Length: 178
Image (cartoon, rainbow, N blue to C red; front, side, top):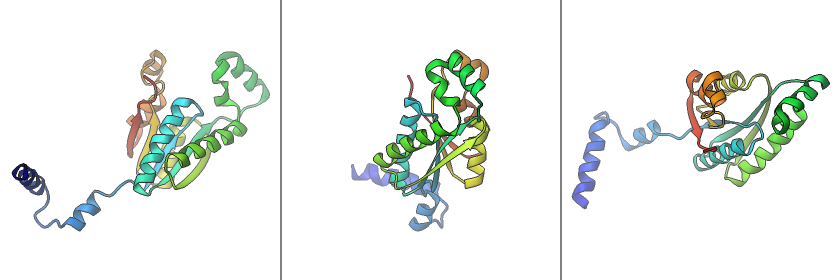
């Protein structure tokens, strides 16, 4: 058993630069410092928040919980309610967004995140998240997989697939919907 451990250690050491010391190795393998997670208020997205919060808590990272929304007028709200039914909460301006962020903060705190920042962003979800990544210089984006395996998601695109394709930052897609 000890011999196998030595061989594994030798293989690992062989992959490092000859002059790499343990402190340098630790620096190369540092945890994410700033994690952004997107939420839309769905149970699926809250699962992604909890996963991101656990990662942030373990790494001592800042967690930025983001919710994008579209400004609406009364006609838009009525039309959205007719079409989207239970999903209409996603398009009703900033008041629901603030409640979504409060709920997400509570879930993130319970999951272990210590430093939590809430961001309500006016705009389309994919571009809003990508812009937030640049603005905050975050090194990880976490999203749920909602919409990824639907026909509409395959034909029209989904937030998880679009951000994974367009982001220059690491993206973690949490399996929240099976």
